[in-house]
Image (cartoon, rainbow, N blue to C red; front, side, top):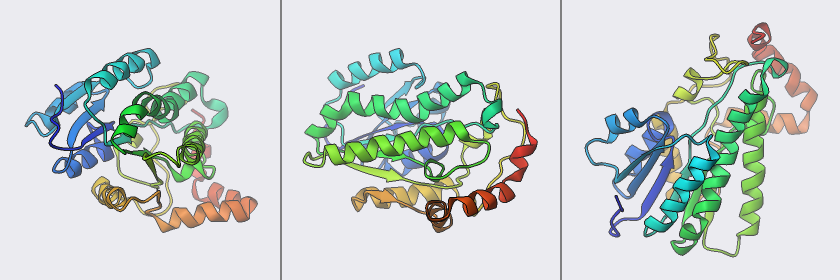
Length: 266
């Protein structure tokens, strides 16, 4: 279904749950929504009332399927004003116990998919003077025990889009990088272990656990105020500064606070 021209159009990945769902609900009043998630049933469950104009089930780790879908959207959508690269997965397993295919899947969803979506939809965004929103992580700025692949993916995401920001500075497209810390979303409930199964041990964390609604409200404000970067949690922001200033101290403190991760070899 082609969204009407009366509203700007927002495309959100990972929209069936967690932060993506909260963002879709907050933005539905002002945008026509094109929502993407691997879970078709959950999309239908939450948006069967017609809140969203278009629902699409898509595995973001399947580059060929994504390319086909993007080519179709590039020709079908009349415009695109907001692209929110929200979908993500993670793992909880020590670096040496994490199989390469687990790392590849995390990289595919958390880094390559946002790049592929951006490259495929950039012409539409340029025509509409649109905005790209990416869900980074403070884990992309500093090491976190048990999440080497996730840290690598989020680091790559940050470097790619900060470079892109500089390269397209003379165009009407803007970029918002969001750096949440610990948010209560299904990404952690479905975290992979080193073999690609669901991790059995509980999540380790520092700082405060934030709700998706709390996070979505701050992202919405950042979108409307045309922010370039959003650091909603001061604790993790200062932790990232500590890592840059004195990395050895940060690593000692991080090992102490997240030591439980060292007890799980898978």
